[in-house]
Image (cartoon, rainbow, N blue to C red; front, side, top):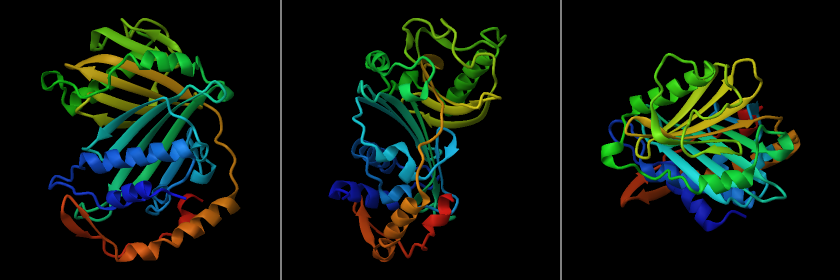
Length: 321
């Protein structure tokens, strides 16, 4: 059963306060990230991952997947978590390292939200894209224990005000690095590498130079890029499909003072776990049962009462099938 704390997080997320510029508040996004992390830790699905609009998409390693067939239903002890919060585009990126020698993983997920109505009131999950790398998938240069050791020495905290880079600069630094990879380090474009610039590729690490060694995917253009940008930490998550590779890749980059300070890369390969439609439909039917209780729900955020109104029933079976 879901804990009361999980339920409270879910309810507080349903209608976060939004500024006049439709900029999402930090704490509802952070709360949802915590909810997502707890779901993976205990292997329990939460209604917020399935009660979503009709255009909701859940992907695992590039494949359309039912949440009940995803890695979220397998309990995993997370040794290290890094989360980026994108208040401008209402999105989250959270990356986890699981160094359990019996079941090691590196998992990253981008979660994108949309507003329930044209007045920018209330958020709902539109898309969850989860990537996992593991020994069982034969992931390139995978070594979770080495990754954990190196990653613990890095910082992804808020950067000093004097070192912060505008959103456009963060995106520009990330794109220039990906173009540099595509041109095998021979790009005429100057990549803004900081000194030192640490780079983690699978289990390989260079603490001094981000351009110090070859990476899988070099010489291949990055297509279909999806971003999460945290302007406070200077962090950028970009997921993409190298053209013609049949894989999905993830880079998490950190920019200080307009220059790249950290680059973390892994590749997610393989197929999602099988999951029965009958099992998912049973879960969907159970979740539909909670909707009537939400119709007249009122909660208070920061002392301000919010009327959720009457959310429309969602045919969960049709959301992903």
